[in-house]
Amino acid sequence: MPSPRTSSANTGQRSPVFLLLLRLLIPLSILAGCGRDTRVPVATDVTEVTRNPFQFEEDEMVIGEGKRLFLNNCSICHGHQGLGDGPSRSTLIAEPANLTVDPVASYPDGRLFLVVRLGKMVDGRLTMPPVEKMTDEQIWKALAYVRTLRSVRSLQNR
Ligand code: HEC
Image 1 (cartoon, rainbow, N blue to C red):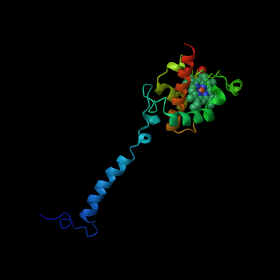
Image 2: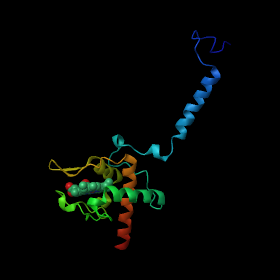
Image 3: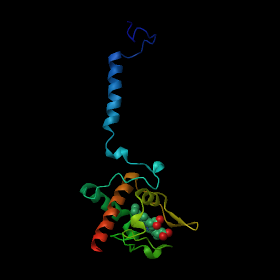
Image 4: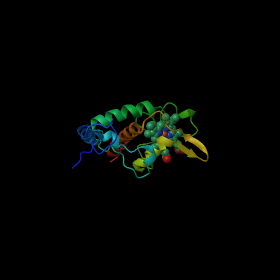
C-alpha cells in the first residue's frame, strides 16, 4: 500500500506522523476550550427562554463576581439591592424597575438578558439604555446575582 506521502506530488508536504498529531491536537484543544465559559450563550443566539448558564445560587464564585458586576453596572440606577432606588433615578425618563419583585422577578432568564443587552424601548424612547461595556458572560453573571436578590426578598416576605 503506498503511503500518503509518496502518493503526493507536493514535495513540501509534512510527514504523516505530523499530520496525525495535528489531527489529534486540534480536537483536543477544542475539547480543552469547552470549559463552561465557552458554552455561555452569546447575544446573537439568545431568546427569551434561554437559560442562564450560571444557575447555582450557592456558587459563591459566580455570585461574588455577579455582585461586583451588578454594583458596577446596574446599581447606579437600580440601587444596591435592585429595588429601583439608585442615585441616578432622578435623571432618567422612567423609574428604574424593582428587580426583586414581579413582574421582573418572574421574567425568564433570556428576557432579562435581552433587556440588558438591547436596552428597553417604550413608545420609541429608550427608557433603559443598553449596557454596552459588559460581555455576554458578565451579563449572565450579574443576572445570576439579581436572582439571589429575588430569593432573599421572597424568603423575607414569607
Ligand atoms: C442608566 C440607568 C440604568 C442602568 C445602568 C441599568 N438600568 Fe435597568 N432599567 C432602567 C430603567 C429606567 C428601567 C425601566 C424601563 C421602563 O420601565 O421602561 C430599567 C428596567 C430594567 C429591567 C426591566 C425591563 C422590563 O422589560 O420591564 C431589567 C430586568 C433591568 N432594568 C435590568 C438591569 C440590569 C441587570 C442592569 C445592569 C446590568 C441594568 N438594568 C442597568 C435603568 C437602568
